[in-house]
Length: 216
Image (cartoon, rainbow, N blue to C red; front, side, top):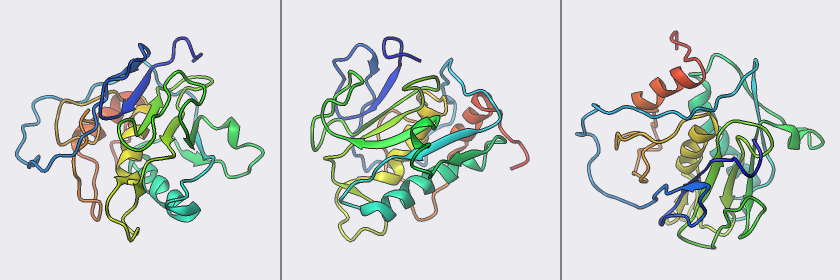
């Protein structure tokens, strides 16, 4: 996928002015999502990974969490998708090969070479590219956001684990769900991160996009 044809999905508070990106609205809500109907399912993109495995690398970290908690949050998010994929998703940790990963994950500031600049704390939080070459599959987080994780002493901020799960869904080939209980719903919803489980819409979505392993 080259820069001119890339589809970027933004996890944000306002619509992007970039015509290549979608308006992925990010806002907090306290409403109960457990009672919502499941009549509408996931959506999928027309871009999928091919091959016998998917590779990823975590190129840097947010200073607010440090290396260990950053890795813990992202790898925990990956583990939730991983258990429903029959093809392995494997981390590349050797620095000389990290840039060759299918999904490259990094924290960046403002303009960073993909026509979708970040804007500091608030508003745009992260974006991801659908599967493909070059930028395809890559996930970018705004380095200036107040990122938190469940072990972090400061509780106010943006949960890196939940945002990672959402953006990984896009990197694996999912678009948005219209089910408010889905982690792929376009608006951010609060989820219980202590005993988090992917809602069934997201699992079914992966079945069509990357061949669901029905035995799990």
